[in-house]
Image: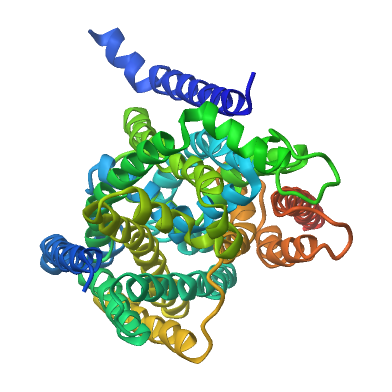
Amino acid sequence: MQTWQIMLSLLAIGYIVGGVLTILYVLRDPARKKEVKKQ
Amino acid sequence: MTPLAKWCILFLVLYVTTLLAVGIYNSRKTRLARENQDEQYFLGGRKIPVFVLAISFTTASLSAGGFMGDPAMSATMGWSYFWIIVTATPGQILGTLILLRRIREYSADLSSLTIPEFLGKHYQSSALRIIAAVAMLGFYLFILVGQFKGIATLIESYIGLPFNVCLFGGAALILLLVILGGINSTAWADFIQAIPMITICVVLFIASMKAVGGFSGLEEGMGAISPKLLEVVNPAGSGEMFTLSGVIGSYVYWIALFVCQPYLCAKFMAVPDASRKNIGKFILFSQALMPVFGSLFIVGMCGAVLYPDVVAENPDSIAIAMASNLLPSVLAALMMIAILSAIVTTATSILLTLGQAVGNDIYRAIKPNAPAASVVKLTRISSIIIACIVIAFNLVSTPDFLSIFIYMGANGVGSCIAVPLLFALYWKKASKEGAIFTSVAGPVIYLLVNQQTFYPLNMWISCTISIAITCICMILISKAVDKKKSSERVCA
């Protein structure tokens, strides 16, 4: 693997981890869960 | 006059006119506010749209360093310097998730408009509020001196106007945006300025990659210059920035020190509401721009291959040299506006924060019942005085224009504020005494560690060590105070 491939892969991993964390944080919102239950 | 200079003048006139129009239009909310004039001026009445604040957060976090210093460092250090971008995204996302909701909610509960005010009210200590404000005045002033010099040097080199004329003109523009409408003007102006910044990043990246022969051509070219440029992590003990400890320290910097900067936290405090949906939106808009701006690091590396003479002579000018050589005049002129935007977005946010430090944090700590109108007035006057001091610094002795000034200033403020702020948000037993001690000891420990007084270390791991030491001090002092109070209660 060339250096640029390693570094861009690390950047992509950072985005994926950060993105998953954010999505989990938004989806696990207690206020949102209450709304879904009401519906 | 060259075609490039003509385009530069045209773009500069357009740029200044647009910014002033945006500033004046958005200042009406502050002007028309009869009640809570201070909240309008400092936080836009907490009604500025999330996407504007998020983009303002990212553009304000980029300064001249992002467009000049970072490509220069990439050209000389190679791929290992790209760790800044690799660590910035997850670091800033985590920092935002940790801080945004609590800062927004807790500061609103305590009716706090600034970070020093929040710390002062939370720990019930005017001394802490003043210490934080003074640290900001001290450390941020140096960043501002560098930014003002950056504007003057940039316009001077592109258009040929005298340095002093450019300095006064740039300072007047920044000052007008700040005093017109506070964050209402600066945040919307930041949002507009993102357009030339994004355009030039994309265009210059494509042109550079084409010229160097794609990523494979870049890899070959860099390997031919020096195998060091292809190192993923610098070897331990090499004295380079990104050894393994430097990489770990870089994560800590983005999570704890960078996101705690008061001029960036102001964007968190101004969010309309701290629902998780809004936090998600904030992260989406702020982080979507990061790889676009990060492409300038790769542009810098292409510069090392294409223009090794420029890198050897004046690395800071590599991005400008590449824009001038690879792009047509009209786009090369846009490069000047993009760098100017990067500087102005940072300078307006910092100048506004410094004005608030005097008007809201020091004055209101001494006179708690001061009316909102007089606090706003004093903030505006303070901003003018601070701008005059910064101009005077530049006229008397112009400092070296280095990215390191920006990181040092940010680290100084971060090491003063980060630990008291994080403990205020997450540990109920954190004491006033611990907060005061860490706010004073933090910058001192950071400077001692970073100056390699005891052991040679790079600046990233210096941040981590100073944060770790101040965290331990906070816990020990708070526990000791808690124990003392418990024993006093038992005796009583």
